[in-house]
Amino acid sequence: MKTRRGLGSQPKIRRYKKIYNKTPLRPIWIILFIIGLVGVFFLSWSLYQPIMDFFSGSLGSSSEEESTDESLHLSETEPSSSRSEPEYVPLPEGGPEDSIRAVYMPVAFLYDSGRLNDFMQFLETNALNYIMLDIKTPEGYVTYASSLASLRSSAAMTEDAITNMADAVSLLHAQGIGVIARISVFRDPIGSRSDYDRAVHYLGSNLFWLDDSKENGGKTWLNPCSPKARNYVLDIAEEVAAMGFDSIIFDELRFPGRLGSDYTDYGVPVSEDTKADYLSVFVSEALERLGGYGTQIYFGSPAVDSISGDVFPYGVQPVRIAKEGYAPTLYPSEFDGSLTARKAVETQLRRLADYISPDTDGALAFLPILQAFGGYGADEISQQIEALAESGYYSYILFAPDGEYSLAG
Image 1 (tube, one colour):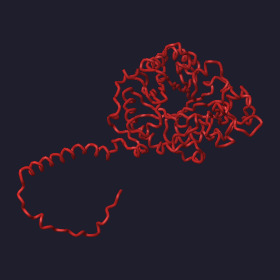
Image 2: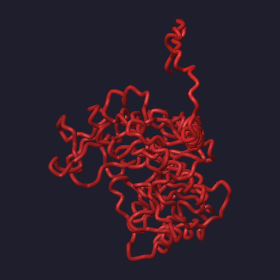
Image 3: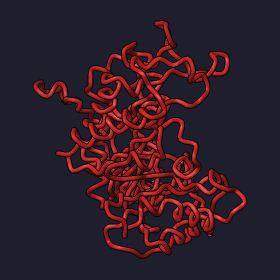
Image 4: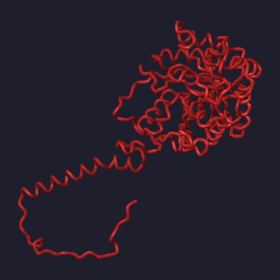
């Protein structure tokens, strides 16, 4: 706030005799004077609402400098006037009141008041009640400003990381929106390179192992057998849980693929029979460390990995590693592009039934991720939701990587 200066000194008042000379006003000056008053009145009225919006926080910033403002605007304003509002086709409804009807939202939307308000209206129009945010990406970046020393001293936390993520979660909760964090576990080239003891190495050497040649963009990985690597991820998860996130999906919870696997060194003997044991250790540690926060834990993987028979990165069908919740991708394009969206989802659900059926003892909490990209519009998305409902499942997450959902009619 700027302070007023010079209030302590009394300025001299100059008087000029000319201002007391009573020269008669001509009619033309009277008319111009009235026009001027009318102009000032209308100008003041036109500025009133924008000024009030500014001080109430509902006016989104438009200048280049203000575009990096970290404040969140979840006001009930109209969508940004620079974009035409589409007529959305409401998604199928139904199911228990506690059903999770979620949608992925890029973290960058938290910095853009216009897009955020548009997105909130999209949620309301389609009766969606949760959003999923990427907290730790497969590239190793962490999208919030962490207080962990292991992150502050590395390149994992970028300059544009959200500095008030806990406030964002609170504001979304105030709007009746639950928040899900997605964390990439062992696929992490930044976290692995920042500490030698966390990484997978080349057999019989001190070199970082790469999942492809350097020329092809090969990346390093966190070592699933390393307690230090597991703690690196779990420290992030615990910090996120403390912010109030309702659920965490642990994605990329696996060993690297087949390429170059003959040259991997995990520091301990690893076979196809023991991979699942090491991954299960991570899940158990996650449940133990996060149990006090009331955060629902899900294990995420493509559904095709659990039904195709090729379980190389896991040692077993990945659904068998999950202990509390399972959040597989049911993308029709991953499973069989020749089937309709409805048929592809129905088939995958049928093959997973032994693990997820509500009638099965110890059935997992089931939160599938549905395809909303690759040209999928309202019809294909609705088919997937309807296929779930017909099998007795009403919770889901819609995923489009850019946060744009083609539901316009």
